[in-house]
Image (cartoon, rainbow, N blue to C red; front, side, top):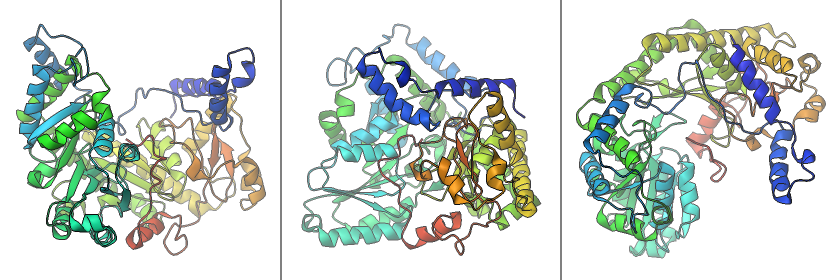
Length: 564
């Protein structure tokens, strides 16, 4: 299940977790202070390290159309370079000084025409774009209203904003948006009088849930409450670019709402397999960004290779060459759902509350599906599933708070155009084997048998690498002895950093069955307790859904640095 390369990475990880500050007494204070800060993470075995996924089937990356890893985009990119043999590699300056050029302006025109927008502005990344939009566009006295699961970059932009207030509404709830806007209109005289504006921020597709914003309903709500136009919508199409609409134009174009949306953001580091982003808006908004947005003003303009790669991707979309890749993703997502739903072990696991894929419900009735298939698990068991999948040769990423609301841990799976039916079927089969094992563990009720086989193998690798460990049997013998757990449980789970995608840097499980280090703290949640709204209304998966229906789970705005 685990090859020598996995052991090698664990050994590399072990070396990275050794405290360094005590060995640097003669080093300059500057470096000692930095290492002391890093040692706080090393002490908890959760220092993040860089690593590579190798020899595994990709079900985690953002290369949705497989353009980055196939030869299609590379060939188009090289053709674009051949058409411009005398190109200058660097732009030589910022957009407002020497960095502007005809090629860049022509590409921005091409992008705007493709998406049916008045104009566009290319920036370095989607992060830069959201920071630029939400920091520069709101004027003093304006208010930002945003979906509670919006990207972290929006929060960073809002922190630098001149907006008077920043108000979340329940995720994907047009009714919650209506209530929020009505209350805002009643409470803010300048908004009510139409002398100040409301900016509504949403995403087209939310990658952690795999759902789509009800954009048509949101547009209708905004029109109804603010008929004079002092409320405008900003949409982030990071996860829909290339995937949704004719030739991948995005959700706004698919719904024919181009004239209803003030600002659109299309990013290129995901579905299009390259880098950069473009902000689509009219000349008033674009001039505002050029004059007031620090991420636009104080940075070098995009280089020619970056622009050529973006143009190559648009050439592929315009000529219909990505349409079959879109269709391929649709087919594979549906095929995965049909395959896993037909497995009795999966159905039993869903019925007993071990796991579920909420976004797959009623999938047959949807005109299109997203590429995201988050598998929700009991608290902490998303790590069990992740390591099981890694052992079977599939990449997957466990997601925990603060990236998602507390009690809603999951494994984020991403289907790519380059995946095969056999790979998708293998993924479904692997998940079902894990579900069967978790069912067996639940039914056995044997103390000390709470950890599935994949995690035990990882624990063995950690022992071989001489990682600090704890004897599971000591905790399993008396699973409800919280005093033993308290000795090793150093933080609440919602204070943990983003878990390392390969499963080495922040493994943590909390629950009555105790704690081991594999190689970090792992808290094994009880496999014999069904998660439901009835018996776990605060922390369970279904409990979160119940809360969301009533008042909405709340993302912690500024503790979400690694959301993708």
